[in-house]
Image 1 (tube, one colour):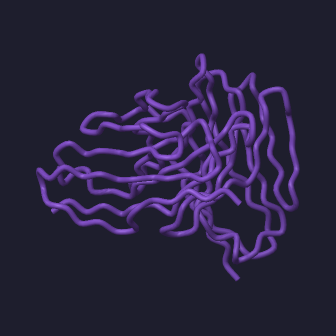
Image 2 (image 1 turned 90 degrees about the vertical axis):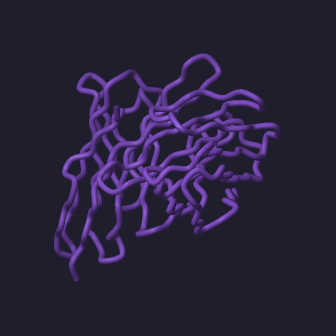
Length: 114
Length: 113
């Protein structure tokens, strides 16, 4: 089975801190995604990547950056955390060739910024 | 803006009844997928329908796709209390090598025993 692992289940950070959320997948998938999920808003795409060192902005990239130095790892960076970035963050991976675009999700990181 | 929008936002039915959820989207797609999320957990893929398909079945799930109306529906037949969850549609759009997967806001389904 595909495994998508997010480094932390729960995280509490202070306003202004630089925050790193890590995601690792073990199935050599080309595509990786970062979403945030807020009540009533569903999942909103922050950034996605379709290859190493390649990244594309999603619907809400402001305040975030990403890094994909290795195929299996996709990092989401909050440059200066703010309280409005308190949310559930979900990472996913997929492969057009292997999964037909079906995405596999990690368990999520619930980030609280105080 | 959201690519996919689910309707209704919330649905409450009795065990044994059928549940129907709808999804509308805005742009041309490669495929449309439905996912399920139990409270506080990650999403689990349920079913995928390609843009050239009109209907697909998987167990108690039936998905339809109408590309002319840019809409899809998910039908869960003979619902069970364990089907209680949030359901999301997601559209896959290709742009060159990029494959963007965009989700809607979801339908919260409650199945009462």
